[in-house]
Amino acid sequence: MTPPGRFAVLMRRLDNQRQLCQNTQHQAKELIAVWAMTG
Image 1 (tube, one colour):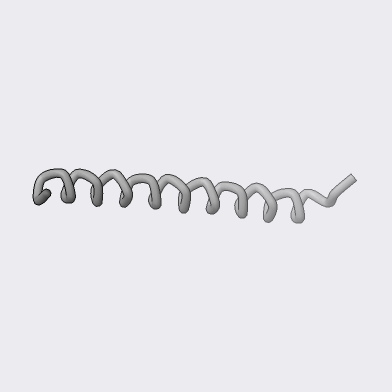
Image 2 (cartoon, helix red, strand yellow):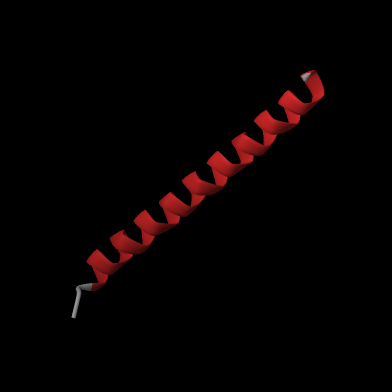
C-alpha cells in the first residue's frame, strides 16, 4: 500500500492539473469570444 502522505501529494497534483485544464479551457473560450466580436 502507498503511504498516506504520498497519496495526498498525488491527489493534490491531480487537482492542480484539473484546475490548470479548466483555466486553459476558460482562456480559450474568452479568446474565441473576443475573436468572434472583433472578426
